[in-house]
Length: 126
Image 1 (spheres, rainbow, N blue to C red):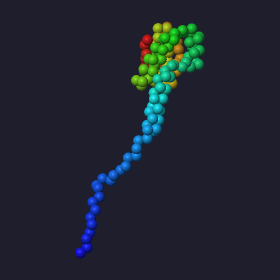
Image 2 (tube, helix red, strand yellow):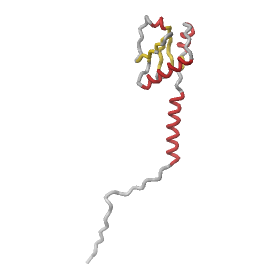
Image 3 (cartoon, rainbow, N blue to C red):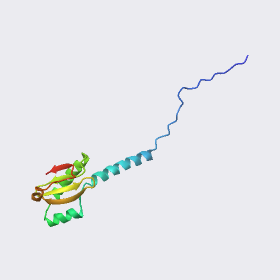
Image 4 (cartoon, rainbow, N blue to C red):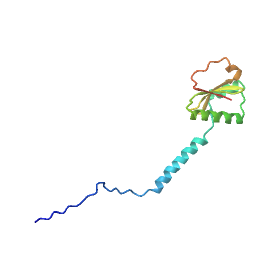
């Protein structure tokens, strides 16, 4: 009689997992930390040429401390989805592109009382 040998095969194939490459994990972590650092370190507003001319023409003086507050509030608004806020300060009104972190235009607060503001999607009152 012929003898037939039956060999059992596992139902799930075995897969060998390659060892973790620590250099790859370090580079990913390094990239993430650099990205976070870049996002938080560049939290200053730029002033467009137009806005700078308006600030000079209208003799609007904004202290560095006030600029820091404006910058913080604009970046906070951007994090909440606001792209183009109107910033109302005691002495000035600013239209800011939060997306580009740039002050687009500026006017005295008294001048702003009679204006109609369009293309804004948020207001920051300081």
